Image (cartoon, rainbow, N blue to C red; front, side, top):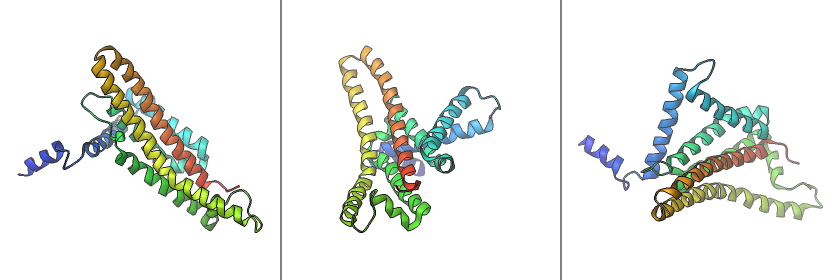
Length: 227
């Protein structure tokens, strides 16, 4: 009875949608790789350890270059996790029979919303009530009150749109990649898909990088002093 229920959960997409099961699978892959590297870590990295260290160092450098040394290291666990997770999810869509969890808007939104909340949480944590200055524009005086009010609503709307743009950009590019691969695979099942798969690898890398870069820029803008 229990085994039958477990198989239904794994196989039946109406019980657990495919994007959810693949998302968990991507998490399991990252956890297993991390544990294996931790178990066999060497002073001189080789193989998978070398590749992972290059990825981690690149993400750390991106974080520190955009947010600063202090906050960059503080936010690195969040930024590194998001970057590696999106990359694995994107690459899963290149495997025949698999689908990328990031080609579903629910998956991308589940990452964009925490980034949005973290941005304003740490903005308030870093500046307190003065965080509102980030929404009032560069001129703050009684004479410029109408301009400050207008700037507040403009900035407020701009911040509300951020999780939408983060979600839709990644989702749109990944679903478009799958549709192109499927259509061209029907037209030329041997030659064209190989070239498109190469393009798919490039798109997967770029979209992961763009999501992480925007995340670092949003966090940097929240913790820096308002001008």
